[in-house]
Image (cartoon, rainbow, N blue to C red):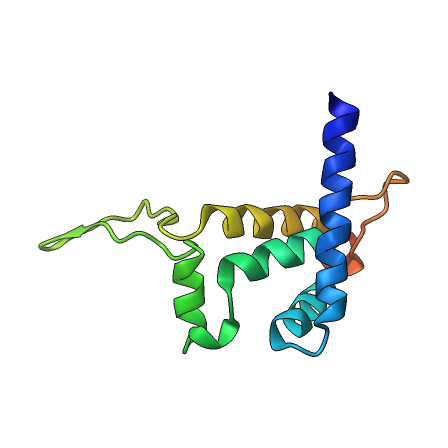
Length: 126
């Protein structure tokens, strides 16, 4: 059953790759390729993120994209009280937020040899 599932998943990913390659001149596909240049972002992550966002041009300001992803702080305020223990609002797309989290984990992780995958985020550079 697992082999069947893996085979079907691989076939689906190949189909998506063919579609992206056949429409490579479209803005949507160009944005997928641009996302793939980010360290830690693979093809599937880029496609998932673009399918959740749709088009970056829809957001007139970075804050709006940030809010759509649910990464903005939730406001705890009543009268003169301002809450200081503020967490993420998590109002937006949970799938896009999960993809961004995995991209971050992959970007700052270590290789099997114990070296940083991305030397810009290495603790040794402090």
